[in-house]
Amino acid sequence: MTEETRAYGSCLVTIKDNYAIVTFNRPDKLNAFSPDLFEGIQKGFAALKSEKTIRAIIFTGAGDNFSAGGDVALDIDPLKNMSLKEFKEYFDPLVELYMDIYNIDKVTIAAINGFALGAGFEMTLLCDFRIAAETAQLGEFFVRMGLVPEIGMCLLPRIVGPGMARYLCYTGELIDGKEAFRIGLVEKVVPADQLLPESEKLARRLARGPAAIGIIKKAMNQIGGQPLELSTDVGVNYQFAASRTKDHAEAVKSFLEKRKPSFTGN
Image 1 (tube, rainbow, N blue to C red):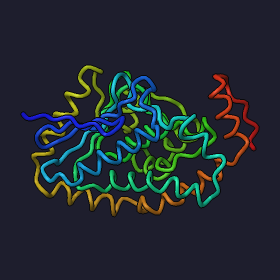
Image 2: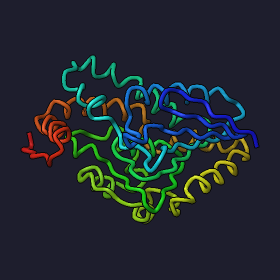
Image 3: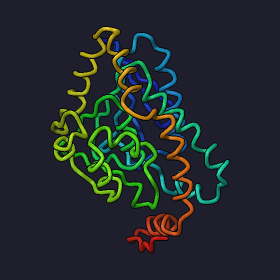
């Protein structure tokens, strides 16, 4: 088996014959999505899109965590000073990346180690399959920051049903790998040391499959409910509204001050 690793900023792309592994590489920051990491994911994924021999892609995080989501100081706090036009322009590249991951004609697998929170959690929802370590901690963390889950509001009800989706979105509660498997959020749960081997096993199997897999994926994405493109546009509008609340400002302030937030419902 041939193997080649390329670095795109804080994102590593390892190519192994007919599949690839995209690794978020900010382990000291729980792989939170900084502008540098996000740009690296964009460039790395763009390169993989054009690789005809790559038929499956695994997303995972370096070290002990998948991703803690947006970096509060670098990615979330700046939102408060943006106009609606600036806000949408800021989100455009993110939405474009989400659409590319969701619609790509390759199999996508999230290998979830440790924390997968907020935007990190949303990234797993875009994938065709989710495999979690028993020690994984998954959660729609947005509500704890006074924000809304742009992707989760659309995709989570399709995966776990509307009731459980509301529960996860409203509470921001963290669940481990076994509970995620029980509610149908992940397709498989494994010991932490078996996470990447099991994910690669599935990637190799599906990468050897027929072209029909890509056709099935496209068809299921189209007939599974409202198009993600429309849902995401609505989600960004609601995210703008949430980012203007006093509770969001308090959530960011309390996070940076390392204390519990005091929400007022405003």
